[in-house]
Structure formats: C-alpha cells, structure tokens
Length: 100
Image (tube, rainbow, N blue to C red; front, side):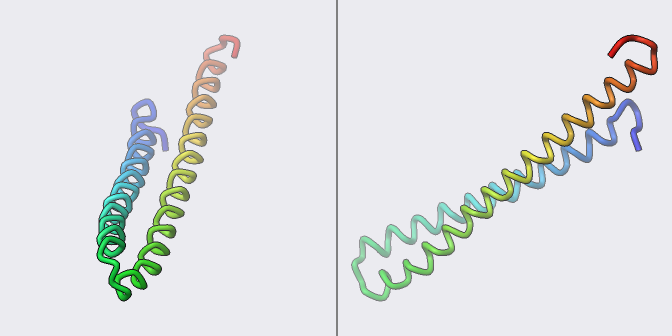
C-alpha cells in the first residue's frame, strides 16, 4: 500500500488526524455555546432556566467525554503511525545491508 515513499499512507494518517481535529473543534464550539447558555440561565435565576441547566450540564459533560475519547483515539493512532514509520525505516535500512 505504500506508494511514493509512504506518501499515500501519510496522506491517510493526515486525513484521519484532520477529521478528528475538526470533530473536536465542533464539539468545543458547541460547548462554548452551552456554557454561555448555562451562565445566562444561572444569572437569570428563573426556576425554569435553572432546571434547564441540569440537562445542559449533562450535555456539556458528555461532550467533554467525547473530546477525551477523540484525543485518546488520536493518541493511539499517532503511536501506531510512529511505530509503523519506524518499522518501515528499520526494514528499509536492514534490506540495504546496514545494521539496524
């Protein structure tokens, strides 16, 4: 699957990272809106608004969990790509007859 010195693989890895970062940014943008609404509801001291905050805070907590999961997944992917990269380098070096 490696083409042009690993560029195809690198492109797929980059694409995966970019997709994950976009997902994270979208969640963080949503969290900013949730936090603003929670603050407005809190400042209003209106019972219905304060009750609504319970659900908003749950949504915020779930979003934070999703961001943590996305970063954990990204970290795992990054480690795998680094391992694959170093294995490819050592295989290529070994094939040329140089010590690993």
